[in-house]
Length: 188
Ligand code: IMP
Ligand code: MG
Image 1 (cartoon, rainbow, N blue to C red):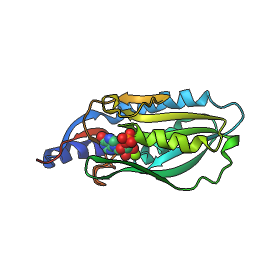
Image 2: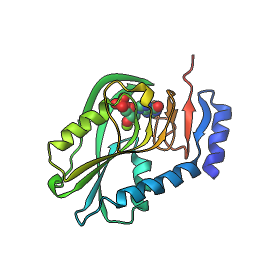
Image 3: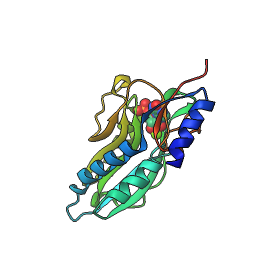
C-alpha cells in the first residue's frame, strides 16, 4: 500500500505517468486464478516456468508462489524494444535453459503481448526442444496492436492500445517497480 501511494505521488510529479489502469489488488486476484489454471496442467511431470526477461520478473515471482504444485523456474531474454515506446520489429532471444525440455510441461510467462512477434518467435524456438506441452501465460494482452497471429492460453488482463508501465513493465528501464499497471504518456 505504501507503494500504491508512491505511484499516486509519482503521477502527480511525473507528467509522463498517467492513470492507474490496474490496481495491485486486482492483479493479485487474477494471479491467483491463473495459478489455479496452471495447477491443472500438472500430471506428475514437472512444470517448468520460463519467464521472458526483463518484464516478467515480478509476475513470475508472484505466479510461482501461488501455484500449489511443484515447478522449476527458468528465464530467457527476448528483446524487441530497444528504446522508448517503439518496437524495432526484430526479435532476439538469448539465455540458456539447462533442462531436457522433453520431460517438462513448459509454461512461458510474459508481461505483455503487443504485436505478437516476441512470443511467436519464442514459442517456435521452444517447440524445437519438444516439451510435453507449451502453455503461454501473459499478464497483459493488447490485441488491437497485433501484427502477427498469436493467441495466449491464459491472459490476465486485456488493455487498450496505450503504452503501460509498472509491475515489471518499463519505459526505457523506468517504472518497473510500481505495484500497479499505469498508463505512460510520452512527452511531446
Ligand atoms: P511484441 O513482440 O510486440 O508482442 O512485444 C512484446 C514486448 O514488448 C513485451 O514483452 C514488452 O517487453 C514490450 N512492450 C509492448 N507493449 C508494452 C507496453 O505497453 N509497455 C511496456 N512494454 C511493452
Ligand atoms: Mg517483454
